[in-house]
Length: 93
Image 1: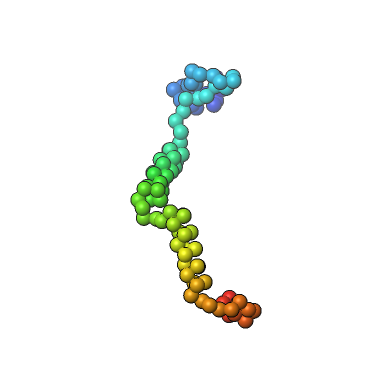
Image 2: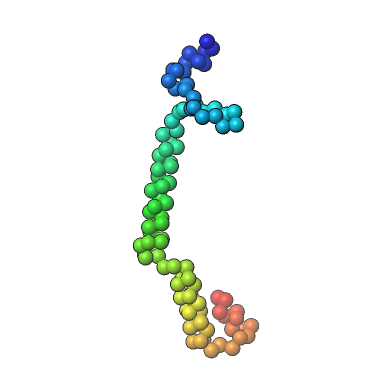
């Protein structure tokens, strides 16, 4: 028996019963840090979906674009400035 086989208890060295393309897998648990990251990701995804898709707290993208377009059009109608280099320079400031 080699040194590495003596260090690992036999119950942790079991293999799964299935073989795919000649590859055998050990039957071991995932690390806790990986499981916690996975669970946190699921909770975040559910919260994100609820906040943006279901709650109605955030405007939809189409509504935001339409409101901004209406604001720009209203600004164009209210300012009857002549388009000239001087006026464009003043508006850029």
